[in-house]
Length: 317
Image 1 (tube, rainbow, N blue to C red):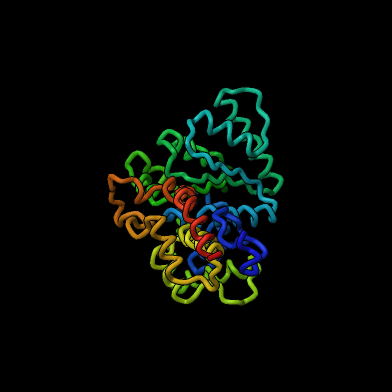
Image 2 (image 1 turned 90 degrees about the horizontal axis):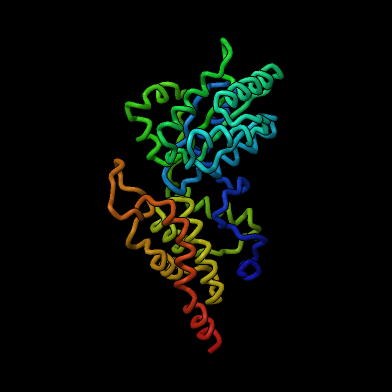
């Protein structure tokens, strides 16, 4: 829609976790290196935690791409709302392990046999669970028990738990102390600084085919950071809809006001895109709600239904 107007080959701010657009800050490089090191050296349990929208899933996808190049066997569970029976069904399915029995003990024996075969063949296997903060205590306990699948010297299955800050809080609970003690590496993502936000926007525009012509004015870039607080997903949403609005208004480069108008429609001038410090709970779920951020684009589209036509009409007068 706006690509030709801004000289772009693709949409630079899609919220899809495309590893091509992974912007490697020092923190992201450290997290990716830690994850890769932990898996390759069979450290067992690894966690990846961070605020909503700080790039955990994109980082995981980048990790998966790197592991596949090294011919590491991977299972990626993206739906963490499951019971213990479903857990084993998902694991066997992801690894491509056939097991006629639905009995959990039989499935576990089949998994152990398969893991031993992979180990003897010199292969590494890793289980990655996204949105792990949603896992129930019984499922987390079953995952812990999977680390008992080992030889006398090494773990047969490497496990990465990726989740929001609530995962760290959950792991502090007394009933999960055995799991907590088995975590060998803790990796984290964090919001971007102001300088990193500027560089992040420029890099995504470059990858999308920008020729170097100014697309966002310096004031607009500062305004993106002001309302996003450096959360990459919110940066993407602000920039994507600023590009749409600027195209409708036939405005180039994008002004500070266009970004402010989008932030107002997102209600980002009323609600911060990050959770309160210290794990505090707020009655309004919007402060730390994955669903809220995911639905921002949909909400904005509804708001814009009428405004796009009026804006187009003004442009023709």
